[in-house]
Length: 110
Image (cartoon, rainbow, N blue to C red; front, side, top):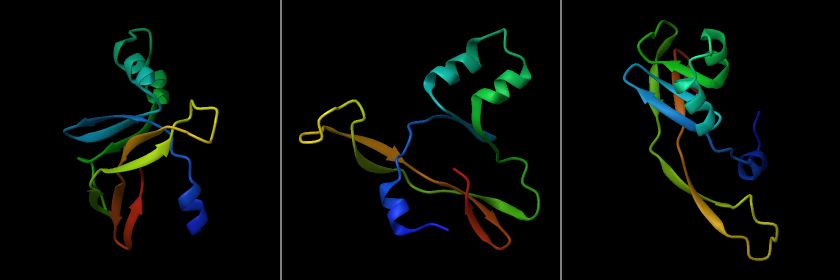
């Protein structure tokens, strides 16, 4: 269960994503993506570890009906590198949600 306080005070972490024609790959950082893409020493298991979330849009089976993506929205957040809270600079982070539509309703997956 979620409370309003949890939603408001949630600290979002920056991620890096790659949108493919058949799916979406979410990485913890751009460095993880670069490592996943260019490092020839990684096997399949190491590459799977670098991917935080892998959604395959082409393999939709019951009870999944499909996926919805919300429109990207800007969210202003305080910069994590600032040490003083009096005049903390803000940055704009774009957020969106991916919902898996099931028989019983939508589920947020990312």
